Length: 304
Image (cartoon, rainbow, N blue to C red; front, side):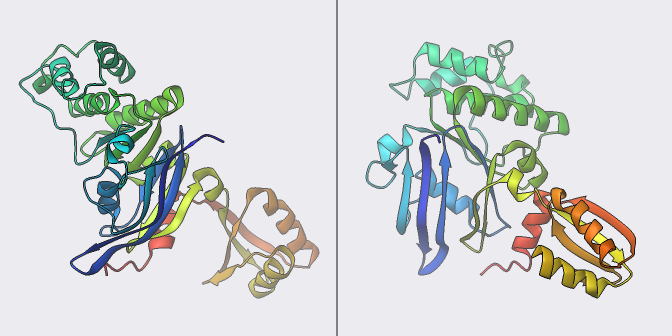
């Protein structure tokens, strides 16, 4: 297992006597891409602001590469690169001049670091051009180059696909996967495009009303089950068989029996139904998406 890069342990944030964040916990290992999801008002932005030191937790622990952001802020933040609320760029300057100016504010960034980050994000051919001539996707790449210049262990991106067209979103997805794999950098991404998180991320953490409701879970394992729909000669009997024999909770919706079933069990279940004298009039399945899971977990969300 890789080293732990980010740890949040029972983090609470109180603003004007009200708990906005009510005990969020999750962790990330090096090289992982994690999606950070939650409905509007769940506390995503507040949590990200605490991780990057723009806001201080009321209680609980936030550590980056083993360093507390409260007790050892400078060392902790030396391991972080981030784009929160879009990259800050000067349009009248070239891409390279933007990076040089930002690098001059950090004693640890040399010319080689700038060149490496430009290569990594694929902007080598346009880096001398003015930022005003860049597309939105190129500006996002330049922002990521800026975040990578000091060789961080953790990259934090807040809504990185905002405003990008489908082609730009696809390019950004491939870039993020490349950075994580080749540089062994952990990437934490907050996004409202859940389908993109599913395509891009190894793990996902979901929060609701300031609490973690799904913590550091593998996306592949979460989506392994599929929704299966049967119309049987006796749906009630089928439901009992699923519960008694297979330990699966099914429900009857209108004329269909529905259940979450892993693909390797489906054939056996169908055979058993037939052995027990049930006729299968209809069977179909639908793979669960991350969006299905997100909506089922956050259903009835109220901002409190």
